[in-house]
Image (tube, rainbow, N blue to C red):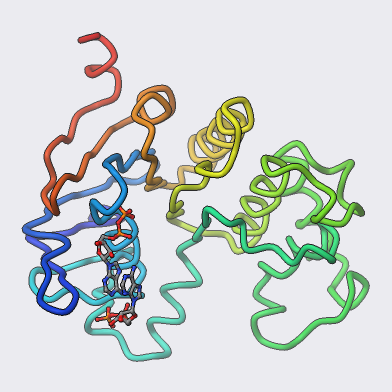
Amino acid sequence: EPVLSLSEVGKGFHGTTVLDGISLDVPQGQFVALAGPSGAGKSTLLRLVNGMHLPDSGTVRTLGENPAACSRGRLRALRARVGFVFQQFGLVGRLTALENVLMGSLASLRLPRYGVMSYPRAVRARAVEQLDRVGLAELRFQRCDTLSGGQQQRVAVARTLLQGPELILADEPVASLDPAASVLVLDTLKRISAEDGISVVCSLHQIELALATADRVVALRGGRLVLDEPAADLTADR
Ligand code: ADP
Ligand code: ADP
């Protein structure tokens, strides 16, 4: 079974159709760029995948579950298996990089934690390991509000990784970064996706970044899926 499967999915808000007849299967380990102009429905699609929105028509299957048919508890369990990376990072600026990563641990989802030392040693070690994978182990005691945007987004990626996701959804993760930082963040996500066999669906409004990073490019326009091609085929055409 694919990691993610949308079948004829439709979604609207207040009578306006945002997504119409979207079908998409994503196999394990694939990095999919979701391209399209602002307002095309990219965020809405990502939110359908983890059950933040429910479809009006069609079916979503994520990691073998149908979010529309899940109980609250089951949906929470499903979301714990799906990492989400946001444009605005979602970090706590006055906390350190390591503290922010630790907030991605299951321990902190169950009970509030105060300070790094309240986490088990093994969890702390795994958090540092994830920071190391995004190239930021040396900056772990630095407050996040003193880091660059690109560094902050890599902290957010490390936090998501600590969760042990089987699928990562990234909603315009580089939209507020400069070009060099954008490439670094996307290359980091791509490398980790390949190493761990994690599927990634990443919305990007810049097609150049999508072509440079993704295995496959899917584009939305006016609520329809208008392109679905291997990135290599698209770059060969240019
Ligand atoms: P994108 O991520 O491609 O920029 P979005 O999925 O955010 O697109 O939005 C697609 C359209 O749906 C926009 O017109 C937006 O205003 C509308 N929309 C998104 N979410 C909601 C919502 N919760 N309620 C009403 N309209 C929404
Ligand atoms: P659903 O539960 O049907 O998936 P939401 O819970 O996302 O829908 O929608 C809640 C409300 O939030 C919407 O009805 C809308 O008023 C508002 N909203 C959220 N995002 C947007 C947006 N991008 N544009 C317009 N309205 C929005």
